[in-house]
Image (tube, rainbow, N blue to C red; front, side, top):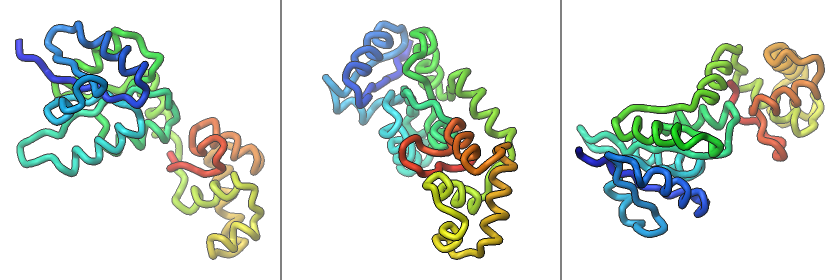
Length: 209
């Protein structure tokens, strides 16, 4: 059986050791990690990594892949479970997405899927993304308004910051509240935070879903 090379380069060394312990004993997989063999990244078919590195590596791999050469597959193992985080990773070209709380069987299955050139998204993340796609999307301007609402800005302040009229701001606020099924401005911010449209603690809105 031809082995598929998997290189683990998670930012958390404890997670790296755990991932290696689970995957190294699987038939058909040749597993290395950056802790012992950092140079193995160059020839790996699958990279198992954390969220931030995974998104960056997926973009880099897609940009540098030569003709007839499939880009290296990136499997993200993370605690990030918000809609916008998953969708951003998928849009960047990440081929697999797992939560760190997943079972060992799912980890092995996901790694095998990527090694065979397929994609994998955990069941809970699949439901999250599917649910987000059924909702009416916020427009770019509505997302801008939502971000400023989260920062506590009033209509006049939002109008000044965005260079639009107060009446236009009111229209966008109404649209945001309708699409989020919110009963008040503060409720809209709460709903957006719960759905992962706003990064907790930053007051900033993420890409709308």
